Image (cartoon, rainbow, N blue to C red):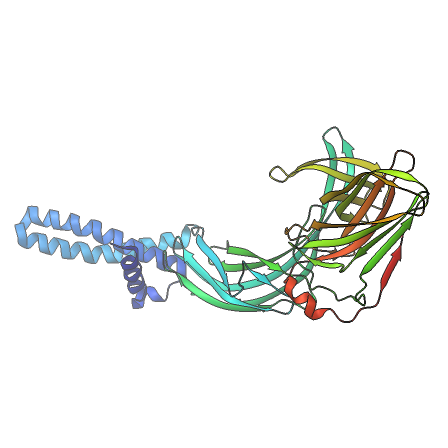
Amino acid sequence: MSSHRQSRLLTALERLPIISRMPLEPKRGAVIGMLVASLVLVCLGGWLGYLNRAELGAVAGAGSGLLLGILLGAMLGALAGAILPPRRARAEVIIETNASSGGRCSPGDVISGYVRVTPENSFGATSGKVYLVCQGYACHETDENDDGLTLDREMIDLHVSQCEFEPLARMRQGVSSRYPFKLTIPEPAQPTHHGYVCGIQWTLHALIETSTREPIAGQQEMMVLSTPPVFSSHGRGYQSASESLHCHLTLTLPQAVIAEGQSIEANLRIAALETFVADEVRAVLLRVENTPVGQDHTVYVGNWDSDLAQFQGERLPGGRGTTYVWLEDEATLAQDLRLEIAQSTTLSFKLNVPAQWRPTIALDEGTVRWKLGIAVGSSRYPQARVFHEVIIYTGMAEIMPLLRPDPIPLIRRT
């Protein structure tokens, strides 16, 4: 007999007047007891009746066995259902949302959909809820031992909202049911961030309370995009400048708000204050994760194994709290570049921003910032550097020209 037919038979038996008024577990026990006892006693009564009165005895014996099986099986089954502990509810819980593009959504979006429940065994359900949860984490250094640094992770609750639904009182094995829900992402909202020291995760949780006192649950991560801020530069870009003993560096960017997966374009102007040879001119894109708690050390991350979540790096005193600096992209702009006093040169370059759900974020417990940096090395002089902060967001890069107004020059000197 197929599972669907079995389910229909059990449902029909549970609707019998005597059984329908019983609590859930005794009701299930009575139905199962009736079926098992009736089958056994029908066969046994028919066989004994056949031995005593041939065919007529077999029919009478089978009828008596059926009646006795129904009464005895229902009594013993109901008693067993009331005494024995209920079975653990098992079911596949899938959250189906209207969010397209892999669950991506923006602050202010309404998330609607269904909770689909497919029981692996039959059980009773009492209530159902869907939660929209945003949690962050911030890691900080505690101790250094032979095994390396120890990082403690602090979890932060940023948002919780919920809606309720009414599941079927009786969940049948193999019979799926769907329940609608609707929740709204608040505005403003922190974006999804998959960082190492700092992170933010949005998740939908479906929870169904059952008569077995062990709820069943399912969850799905939601990818919340960041909203890009709007800055202006009056068409002259954004600049940072620094001056050292032998040169003056000016770093100019046409824009300082960049989407993940896009490229950062910039120009570097080197003005020589003394005649010197630049052994190497190097551009770097850095992601800086910081939490204010820690031992005031900065870790410059080198080789990174994403599969093992292990890395090698250099740990130096300095900074505030716990700081990790990740090299995301780099380029050599020039080598053995000779500049005479009062001479200047301009170098153009482009660096790529990886698409890894690691936008700029700022929380009280931790921050993630991105910096574009230039280092000019010379054997005769200390290394000259200039940095400009860029804001990285997760969203549609195509909307930025629509948001950008007529700007004002933004210049910072370092």
